[in-house]
Length: 424
Image 1 (cartoon, helix red, strand yellow):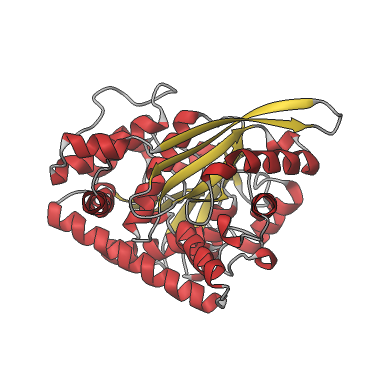
Image 2 (cartoon, helix red, strand yellow; image 1 turned 120 degrees about the vertical axis):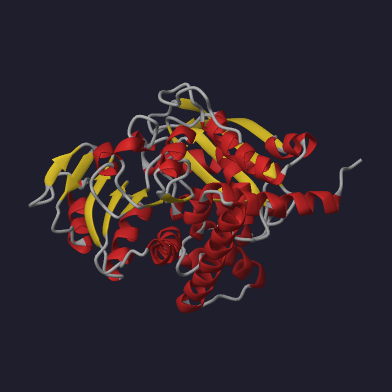
């Protein structure tokens, strides 16, 4: 099976390297042809744009933006837009690649897409962000749409960003087009349950994994790296199942308490102070240290490559549920396989977000909106079914859960690609 023979620590390992290594490992299992590998690795379309934006002081800043559509064999492209100073084309291509398999593993009719703008939203005013978003939407308008490519929120973008994006696209089209993006505010065509969907879907997969590993959630301990939307909501939801969250971190640092952290109190503290650091009666630690504290379940919910060959041997969890995209490098994966640590891979664990985005899109197209119980029941059904399909595949081929998830996803995309054929 394909893997990296060299070390994977450091900046030399790019996100696309990780994505391709994961793909090749699964492709080896099913004997995928070289021709089909070449077809499925390359993005269908890559667009790089300039995003000139008038700043509050009257000056013009030209930001660089990208949108990558990786594969459209199963439906329109689907994937988030991130505003971050560290955005690179390589990263966006990898994230679009992962989105193809994420949509396929939960069997929703989308291909993979992703986009981003290189900027620092923390240093920009609301007005500057709105003007940049609207110009970016204008530049992407020729290749997006409800039946072409449907963006969504990602790192440092939110429902307000999507409202601006949808309004700009609608203005250009001359008609309100709700379905061009998902993750919108409820009053602007959003779906109930969307804000909690990524965390809720992740916790559903943890519940299923705990059954297999013989872990009682009523006595389980949990550590969470990253305390944004996914991490903080996962804290609430898994605590409701009885588990005790003993460590969390954000970009400023981490905290630890063997007695457990109260979700609502901690979330209120972070809203008031901007960080989890300093929460009363906790031990301070580094942001990365929460990855290696003693616990039953680890939820990495930050950025890519958080767990590599240097810290993987110190991870003590029995289950790792990847709420983030690409948090585990291939060499770290190999360590976890050797130690029989179950990794619920990102393309499965965090697919709740895109699943409820699909529900939002369906509701937009039909102009028929669901109550929150209907959303959550459908999400639970899809996540539970998908987890069990992946686990069955892992047992049949005697492979880890990540490779099994890719096998399921690749088989579905290959089938669509072969049935559609090559044109011309």
